Image (cartoon, rainbow, N blue to C red; front, side):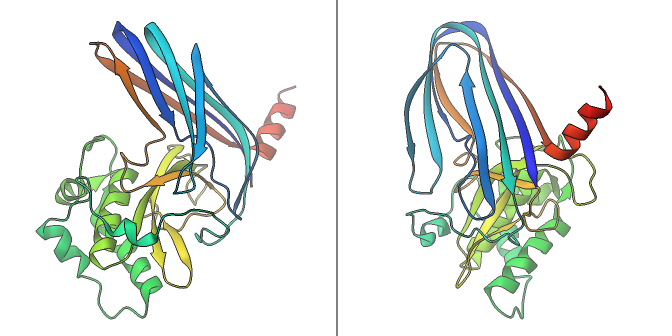
Length: 278
């Protein structure tokens, strides 16, 4: 599938800030199921700093905006070609040992309810079967409900609520997978549409679980599936905060507001619609 992606993030400040330093994980991953044809990242009035590939295989760009500034606009545009690999992250280069992803974080710290949930799956045939069953269990336990959770909601909080969004599904799955001695991590990216073709929140997140003999495999508990050609992978981390596409520090006392607009279109359909309008 050939996808055109437009992603704009706007930070607004009620008082001008002196300086902003940002770390952007906004470049698509390189692996067998994903190829980038062109990709541009622009920070309005920004100065591009060092760029590097980290140990997890993610491409990181540093940017600085010198104030005074009352807003920062980050715009990403590009084209990506994807294909279905049944969720398996083949041909991906990274240096971190998968066992590092057994470590819990404040957002994925297990409580009694998460420990109990992790033990609900019994009689699994192997690690792959266990992973699929855990993902399905999380789908059943967390109803997809926008607006009931926030960025700081933990896996334990989301399970207690029984509701949440893709971030919550991913973090709950990560927590229970680690409790079953399966390395698991959070993945940020984009999603073209749901499986039935209906529009979907284009900025998306899911989990990856490491299975012996196969490597990392994606599981999207929010949509009860493994990532396919509709998904574009950006980067990963121990939890949502660690895998955030944009991280930064602003110098100055100011309240911050953020607006995000993401559009993911299939190129053939986009071209056909454009031609029909001319």
